[in-house]
Length: 150
Image (cartoon, rainbow, N blue to C red; front, side, top):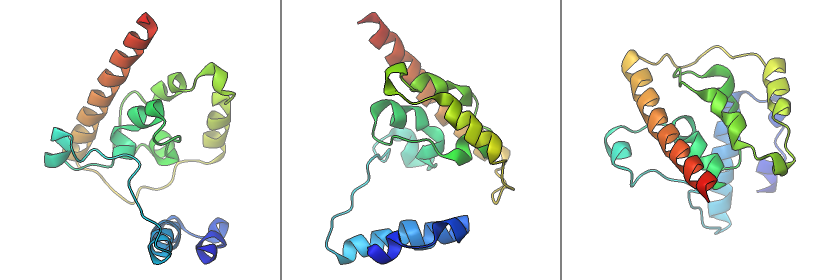
């Protein structure tokens, strides 16, 4: 595991980071007999059975709101390859008492411009991601109203 954690990530491409870092860490953890489990899964959701999608793009509100995954992918906010609507909602997910200033994300995104897209989603892919994102947004809004009523 130390080998993976000491990789020069700042000098690596995105694909190298995924291959050697993310996947390499999984291999190292398994070799050390450390069990691996997904923090969040949508495999039991009816839509996911028929329309597999990257949940970090389609269910980002739910992940942040529940605390299961305490970060947003910069690719979603900055590049938005699937043209997911309503990304500005992310600011409302950051509680004032968290001590985290949303302007830090804005500054980071300003300093790191969009990358050229490696994927070129079709209109069907954009429609699917838009639909799944809308379901996530409706659930998030319902939960916000419920919490505000308490």
